[in-house]
Image 1 (cartoon, rainbow, N blue to C red):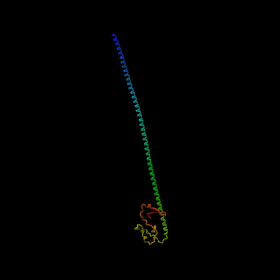
Image 2: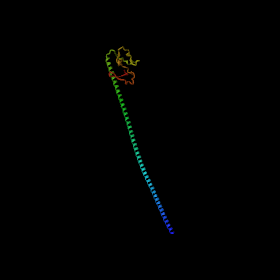
Image 3: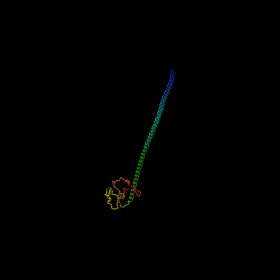
Image 4: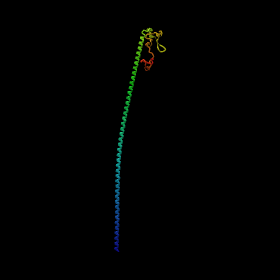
Amino acid sequence: QNRVLKQLERERKKRQERIDAQIRKIEEAKKEEERKAKEKKVKDEADKKAQELKQKEEQDRLKKEEAERQKKLAEEEKKKAEEEKKKKEELEKQKKLKEEQAKKETAEKEKQKKAAEEKEKQKKAAEEKEKQKKAAEEKEKQKKLEADMAKKDGANDPFKLPKPADYDEYWYEAEDGLMYNEYDDELEEGYYYEGSSDGDNAVLPANYKGIPRPKDYDEYWYEGDDGQMYNEYDD
């Protein structure tokens, strides 16, 4: 019986040892699994951190590149704006110069125009003056010629009487505004005094001023059919 008990005890111990060994194996396997899981977790966390760090570095790199690109674009825009501004200022400067040049040219043209007008005006005035002078000379010449002819025609005129010495003292102005001489009033029809009332050759007193000359007298000269110059006021 003791041998059986001992045998049973040995078998129990062996079973217990096997059980304990299995338990230890399971525990070791569990520990190993936990260790591996822990290592895997650590590794995963490390990989995750590394990935996050890599992503962050990539993001930082991209941000830096974007910042550089934006900076470069801003510099290019600034440079372009400065060039546009400079170009605009140059165009404004050229426009201003052109306007000033145009003003100078306009002023010069206006000056030349006024000078030409003044020259033309002076030329016309000179021509008109010369024309009037020639007309006056021609009229004086015609008048002298007519006087000479009248003098020549009346040299042997029996109706011509010697002019009294005090003839010029008897001039008077009639109601019609014309000048007459009392000696002429006393003459018989047809008779006249030499150099006195012989038609257009009548001699007026030295102090006779006649009718005042109109201001626009020189504007009424005209050329007659005989080619001579006459004035409408005189007519």
